[in-house]
Image: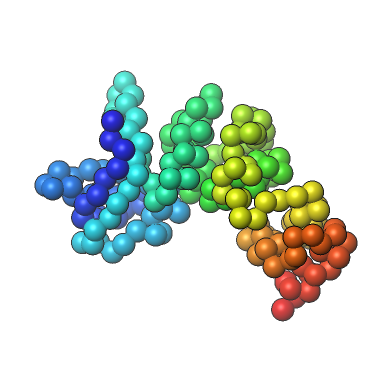
Length: 190
């Protein structure tokens, strides 16, 4: 029903923002990834939205990118995952990180998100397989088997997701596992 809002940003109270569209103020729930990229209060803002009607409420969720909104829509299709949980997932990890976790079937990365337990994480990975992954978020740097093994090794050595992903991006696409791990460790040591 409401697909996009363009107007003046009136208030920012995480995770909610108030957007004035020609005299009508819309309260919009946004993931933290979108919230951090919002302009200052009083400036123009455009948000893609998802309107959800429940028996007791009508809620509007806003997103800074098409990928975020599409991922939100895929998440709320899953039994037991409501809009609040989907928003929490998108706030805890970016679309690219979620897609990579789905591609590599890494439940441990999802469990780090508040409100997501082991069973929910496993169900999410199962339901999202084929819907997220190489097609969303990881277009530019597709993960092959060697890169997946290198990433797993870096995570096992105690590096966080961002450090490991940055080291992985710096590697040549056709690098082997052992050489890739050595090169990644050298780049992380700098």
